[in-house]
Amino acid sequence: MTTTPFPARRRPNRRTLLGATMAAGVAVPLGLAGRASAATADAAKTNTTTNTNTHPTAPSPAGTKTTAPPAHLFIPPPTGPYQVGTVDLHLLDTSRPDPLNPGQSYPLMASIWYPARDADRYPVAPWMTTGTFQAWLADAGFDPASLPVPATAGHLGAPVRRGGRPRPVILFSHGAHDHRSDATTVVQELVSHGYIVATVDHTYDAFTQFPGGPVLSPAGSANVPESPSDFAADARFLLDQIHAIAAGRNPDVDRHPLPDGLPGSLDLDRIGMFGWSKGGTATALATLADDRIRAGLAFDGPMEPTITTDLAKPFMMMSAVFTRDADPDAQEFWTHLKGWRRYFQLNGAEHIAFSDAEGLILPVAKILGLSQDTVQGLVGTMDPNEGVRVQQAYPLAFFDLHLRNRPSRLLDGPSPQFPDVQFMS
Image (cartoon, rainbow, N blue to C red; front, side, top):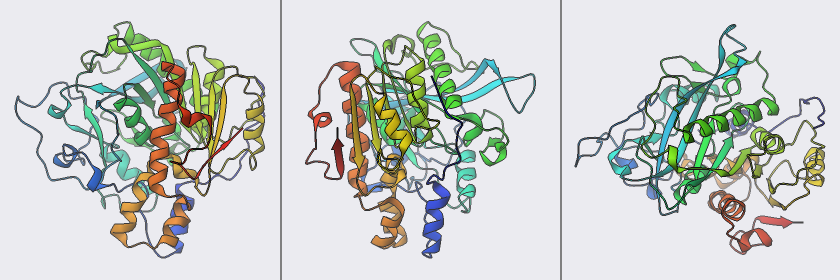
């Protein structure tokens, strides 16, 4: 594979978006408020401000549920028939040194999300741990104690719902200076339809926290540059650990038990990957490099350094800012897709249309009394509700086709359901 040096091009980021809002005279905690009206009932019964850098392994006593003050913020709930479970993993890549701790191995935090059973008996997973969430808030210029952590649809440590055969596995790579939870809307949706999804914090370009340790932030690791190739290496290492789990081993450094039924539920012959922004580029690189990954999906990936290697596997590009017209690297990568390929452009959307912020901006606007002009200045003119439905529908259709052989008309042309999604050949 041929690449060019990683250029320092300007990218839309959380600070840019927040800066635009502050200039309008309003502080908007992007991605930090949710749709209470659409939240699941069990999430409303769980306090999501608890630090979850632990691995619950037992349910509450039979017939009881966790009770605590109601949560206020929610990730948009999934639409599929299955409940969602999740477990965190503390991992060590012994093949790579830790750049900040000589003589030690490279550490990572990851999560596995899976279809669950009896999930109501287990605590609801927060979007991030309390420590990482507060650091994320502070980095964006907000009082770190000003908001509770949003709740997800996941249940910590719930047993795996068994199916007729092992379930397809999908990897996720996050954007620059972010965290492994930034596409939970997509992750939950895939899981609710029967997939297992593994997410990873790219340690020195993420807000992350290891059990019993301090919060790490991108700003504190500024002298450890992480390229899309590093992100791809993290994803491939995570895939190695999934293979280990399928073989009956537990890769968690602290040996916390895995959810019941997980090892036998992983289909290692049906693996896909998706990523947002820098993670979208990493998805392209990992799909090129790893024969285990059968199909890749990039959300607004800048595709830099320039990729000039042909890829014969199925690959789908969805863009908002890094379009083929505006981004020569994205166009160049498109020309090297030699297998099944699709390209969709979200008209009127901003970069964050592919993150959880898209589903959380309207409740924030209602709470803070933001004008329509302010909202559009942040997320663009595309209806955020349509943006959430795009996140839920298109990745599911893509992976259903290439990992389950279930065709979808959604991938073959324009859809009246999504007027702002432009199908381009």
